[in-house]
Amino acid sequence: MVIHLPISKSIANRILLLQAIHGDPLMRVSSDMPDDVLVLHDALQKIRDTFGTPTAYQSKIENRKSKIVLHLKNCGTALRFLQVHLEKRYPGEPITLTGDPRLMERDSKPTSQTTSARILHGENIPVEKNESPYITMSRKIAEAYPNVSLEADWSSAAFWYEYVAIHGGELFLEGLTSDTLQGDKIVADIYAKYFGVETEFEENGAKIKKSSIFNLQSSISLDFERTPDLYPSVALTCERLGIELQATGTERLRYKESDRIEAVEKHEVRNDHRIAMALMCADYPVSIEEQACIAKSYPNFVPQHITPIKGVNDDGLGKKHALSKLIHAATSEYVWLHDDDVVLPEATQKAVVLEGDLIILPLRMESLCEKPSLLERLQIAEYAAIQELTMRSAKKGEAVMCSGANLIVKREVWLECERELHPEIPSGDDMFLLEAAKRRGYKIGVIDEPDYTAIVRPQTTWKAFFRQRMRWAGKAPKYTDRDIIRCGHLVALANILQLLCPLIILIKFPIEYGLIKKREPQTSWLVALLLEIVYPIYILIVFLGGLVRTNRW
Image 1 (tube, one colour):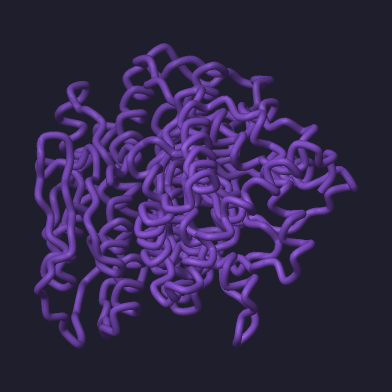
Image 2: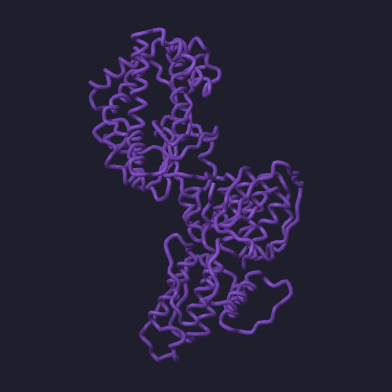
């Protein structure tokens, strides 16, 4: 699984300040960059547009009419850098720095950011013993300017180290290098030593994986004085793995975007991007509103991009109308769809690593009764076979089925395909979406794991059963995808042959019973055999009924 990390905002902001100091063009920015970079860039550009570059600026003009207010959100780096920059290059100009309430409450004492800004402006500040890595970074960038290149962000990588330490598995962190200016690279050593997460550097990044043989310590001691940004990830990793953490050098953590010591202890986001991501990777729920702060440093952080959504008034216009309302209102990149009557999978409260534009997830059918009726047992067996076929075809890259009862889709994909979902047909938002996504070349992914399995219920009466199945069949004539059509033709042909030659069941039954047992091992062969016997008749009834069924739910 490839993880796309953001650029290092520490490096990017230092380059921006140097560009402003030297009067060079500011680097191009884009919406996928950290908010901290965008805030500083826009502030520097506004100063330049109003007062000119520092190299062209002469002196304050008395009674200047140009006055600007720079809102810096909750960006401490921008505040510290600009305080020094205005003092050094635009003394006395009517420029007001403001921001979110938390920013204005920040400790006014000089920080490593203040010292870094002075170094970037050319001050000769002696090297101190145990100097902050951020100050050392500033010295190196100032010396090498303009030959410094942007790097992937090691402090953002910390959240994925946390994720792997807790959940296991393997990830590839694109863009990370061992030869870096960033002090937070020490996260690789910390997680290797204490949590068994190994790092292997390759040409385009670093592969991290959880060691299969590693003995955790009952307690560890770490000093965060030089790498305070790693604290949330390490603290929550220790908490989830049952390790006592004795942390020192954490005094300034109380004056960051939040009081990070207390926020970690109470599992509260407090509009703090690092707390939000660390909580999500440790499986603590973070609301969609709370996730907005993540854009400060890592706008493309994957777990923030999933919105589990349930329940909306359809205004009497049906499910597709309700879905449209929900997805148009969503602000996240991905939307996790569920029908109202499903039992949600455990993973809706976990960080999810995604690959694909539409992701097919597993379903199981379970009865509410301790002793299911024959109708329910037949449905459970049928659904198991359908689900196994769904997952096998998707894994082969030839997806022929999916279900809106448990589906993750990119919001932009759904919106682009919305007009192709046949609003005149009450069912099929999922299958028509699959068709449209394939037709447009979007990637269809699949996650076939127990934690992602939602539970659906069987129909309890024959009337309800046939009404549901006829609704499903009613959309079949509108299918255009060749994989779906081919699969439908094979199913129809097999069942027609069985009606014409019942002995065909000797071939069909072992194959379909194998599909059922893969998903529902407890299914008896008698139930499966009965399903096999009646299935051709059931298919014929449903198909004919679907053709004449009116377009209503």
